[in-house]
Each structure stands twice: as structure tokens, then as C-alpha cells.
Length: 402
Image (cartoon, rainbow, N blue to C red; front, side, top):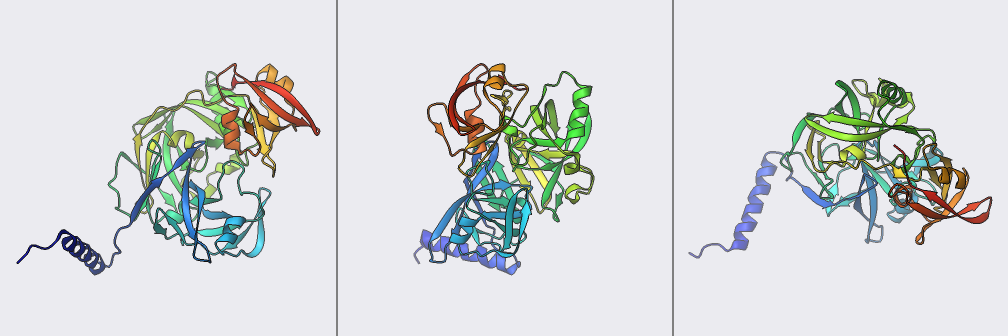
């Protein structure tokens, strides 16, 4: 008798593996690893959808480990045949309507996202002016999965529980299913505080009273006022308080020189996000991007493997608080008191920035603008602006904000 061919052996092995899984009442494990771009400390991945005509449509999504609902821009939802339902819901000046949870694929693997709700953002503009994306993929939609964000390799892996061997230091990470937020304990100055684990925010956010108290207790910790640079995100107050904390302790790891931005105290209260214990903030991308981060949602565990030291000069910028209009132009909301005297003399609130340097032109996102307006302390940036409709050329200077 001839020995079986390699192909036959492979087929039999696959069949036996499938039958074994079926006999145990478990589906065959599925997992996938795909490229992940890290832009402004936020992980962005590509999802694929089927169009009604049978074609495919790809779109970039922010992965927000603490997000509670899927969001699609209206243009994307229309292209893949999703129709909004019910009355419009207003939030922070934007309007949304509910819709069916879309069928999506990541790297060819179907995602079961039915544990989450889905909303379509109404209007031609994107739901966010921070990044060039068309949607948000929340942790709530992946709560049945094991998720690995390998920031150093810029790779995202998603799989059924047990798909990947655990790597790194194990930390408890209670998952609040009702709101879709994981929680982790962080040690600062010898005391332990509760934080949400939030890959969707570029910067670590905290209660204002806590940051102000620490600033008074530690006058040597650099601080500033104004949501500039990486702190310039949707919903950030113009007068956000910024504090550079020497170190945050996560298990046995220390994340050094971490900037936190303030949010109103009610944002992170004892009952916020239905957490079982009090929280003071959300641990953001400026900390998480220093690690290979594994979130095992079903097991409520976090595994961390350190990668690189954080940037100590992430707030070397011209010091402008910005927003964008529908044309992607940058509108100056405020100027930081820590900005250079040249910047404060040459830029006024209400100015519209239409060009940065010789090549950076509208439309901008807040992430690309923050990058273009950062640099080496003392570096001069030449801007084209509109002031009361009149075009002007001005110069601003990069400063160490904190």
C-alpha cells in the first residue's frame, strides 16, 4: 500500500480537528492578525463590509477599547446598505440614529459584534475631526474576544478566547459589560487609583480636582493650561489643565513622564460608567502605546509587555487650541499662556489656519495639525491664516509647553 499523500494527511487532520471541536460543542478557534496604524497614539484598523451589489467596501476605524457603541459615518452606512432608524439623538453637537449592527470582516475573518449597539453619524462630515477615519470599533463589540494591540509592531490580533498564548505580566482588568469599559488599577505616588483602559483617547484623562491637588502638592511637576498638542481632541475644554506626572506604576512597570489632561470631575465619579469601584480617569494612548497590550475580555485580564520609553518632549508645540470646520480648516479657539510671546502676539482666537509651512494645506485633522505644529523648541512655523476673511502670513514658534 502506498503511503498517503501529504495533501490527504492535511485534509484528514483538518476534518478530525473540526469533528473534535464539534463533538465538544465548540466552534473551531478563529483568529487573525492585521496591520494597525498608530496615529496620535490611537490604534486604527481596516474593516471590510459587503455592499448590496456584492462588492466590498473597506474603511478605517479607530479601535476604542473602552467604547460602548459602533459608529459609522453616514456615507459608509449608505454604501453598505444600512438604514438609520428612529429619532435623531444629539450628543456634543452631533446627531446620530440607531441602525442594525453591520456584518464586518477583519483580515478576512467575520466579526461577531452583536453584543454592541450601532449608530450612524448623520451628515456629510465624519463623526470625528481628530483622525481620518469613517467609524469607531468599540471594545463592547469585541467583548467575546481576546484582543492584542502590539503597538511596537503596529499589529492588531483578534481571536476567540485561547487563540493566542498569553504574554507579559498579568494584571486584573475587570470588564464592565453594561458600559463596555475595562478597568485597571494604577499606582501613583504610593497610592492606588482606578482607571478605565481606553485606547481611544490619545492622552490620559483625569478628574480636574485630582490633578490640581497633585500640582499643589508637587509644585515641581510641570503644568500648563490649554488643550494643545496631543490634548487637542473632540470635547476637550479650551482651558484644560495639563500636568506631567513623573511616573505611573502598572504592575511592576513604570511609565515615566506621563502627561494627563483634566476633565470635569463628574466625568470620572464613583458611579461613572457603572464601575464597581471609584475611578479617577482613563488611561490613554500616551501610556498604552509603550506596551504590547493584550485584553482578554472574557477572562477580564490584561497582559502587558513593555516596548519603548515614552517621549518626554511630546508637548513641544506652538501652543494653539484648535478645532476644525466642515472644510477641514483649523480654527484657533485659544492660545496657551505657555506659548511663546511671538505666537501670542501673532495669533488670535478666531483665526483660521489654511496652510502650515510650504505644503501643509487644508483639509486637516487635529492629529495631522498637532504633528505639523510640533517640533524642536525655538523652531519657527510659517502659517497662512484668514482673519475676518482677510488672508495673512504669520509666524509662530515652538515652545516647551510642559
